[in-house]
Length: 194
Length: 267
Image (cartoon, rainbow over all chains, first blue to last red; front, side, top):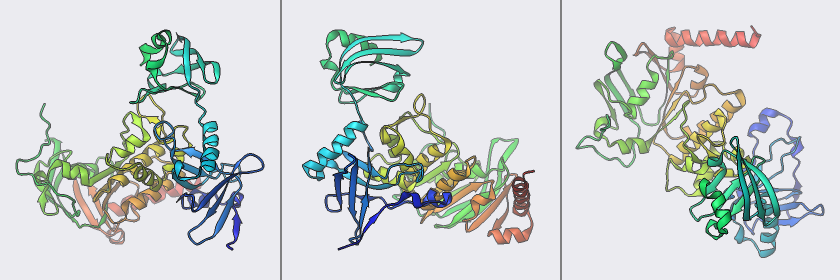
C-alpha cells in the first residue's frame, strides 16, 4: 500500500521560493479523488497521484471558476489560505461535478451553495435612489432583506437566458431567475435598470 | 471612412508565418521634418530572440508598429518569410503576431471574454490553461466571480500586474508565430515583475521574439541585440560583442549599473 502524506503548508519559509513553489494542478476525477466530510464539518480530500502515491488534505476549499454561467463545471479545489502558508495552492480542477457519485455531488454542492449563497428575489418591495446609491427592500428565498447597490451598470448583470444577478456593496449576490415571472408591481420597480 | 492600412488587391493569406523578418533600407516619419527611422536595415531569423535597446523616443516601438502594419513604411520595405508585408493580408499578420506591451487594452466584459478575445473558438479549458501559464489563474480564482468577474471601464479595477498577466494569457491562447514584447515588464514591482517574467518565459519558448526595452536587465535572455539611436541601428551583436564595442549599449549598461549601485547604497 502506498504511503499517505499529510500536507504541511507551514513548511514554506522562504518568500521567494513560495512565490513559485506551486504544486501541479491535476484533473480531479472519481478515480483519483475521494472527498469526505471531516469530523469538524470540513471537506477533506484523499488524492492518489499517477504513481500511486497518496496525499491527505485535512481541509480543502472548493471554488467555482464560472459561478454564474457554469456553476457545475471547472470546480477548483484548493488548499486553504492560512497566515503561515499565505497562498492556498490549487490541488486540482473538477471538469464536471456530475462525474462524481451522488453523495460526493451533494457534499460538494452543499459547500459551494454555502460559499456562493445567492437568495432568489421573489418580490421587490421598493427601490430608492439616493445620491447614486440604490436602497432595495425585497422578499427573497432567505426572507425579507434590505440591501444597497451602487454603480448599477456593473452590479446588475443580465444574462442571455433572462436571469438577473444583483451584487450589493457588501459583495452579496441576489438572483432573479426569470424576470418575466415577477409580479407587475415588482417588475415596474426595476424595469428602468434593465 | 477608409482605413489607411488595407489589403493590397493581390494580398496573400498565409496559414502561419515562420518569422524571418527583413528590414531593407526602411525610412519612416509622422512629420517629414522629424524622421523616426532612417535607412534601417537588419535581418531577424525565425526562432531568434532579438532585443531592441535604446533611449525613449529612439524609434524602437516604431519598428514593432511597422512589422504589424499599424503603419506603412515611407521608404524601403519590410518582408516576412520573403513576402513584403504590404502583400500579406492584414488578418494573417494580426492572427500570427502578438504584442504584449505596457499599454494593455481590456474591454468591458468578463475576464474569460477578455482572454478568449485572442481566439474566440478556444474552449474554457484552454482559457484556464492560458491563465495558469500566465500566472493569472490564482488571482482570478480569488475574485468572487472568478473568470466571470466584470473588468474594463466602470467595473472591477485590476492592478497593472494583473492586467499584464491577462494580456499574456491572451497572447498564450493566441499561440502566435511572432511575439513582440514592448516594455512588457516596465513599471512593475519586483514580485509582480518576477511573476510576469516567469509567464513571459513560457510565452517565448519556440517563438521568434522581439523584446523592446530600455531597461537592459529585461534583455538578458536575448541571443542578439540591436541598439537604436536617433532612428538608426547604431550597433548590433551579442551582449558581449556590444560591451566590447564600448558604444551605445555600453554607455546604457554603465549608466544603469551606476544608477542601480546608487539605489542599492540608498543614495
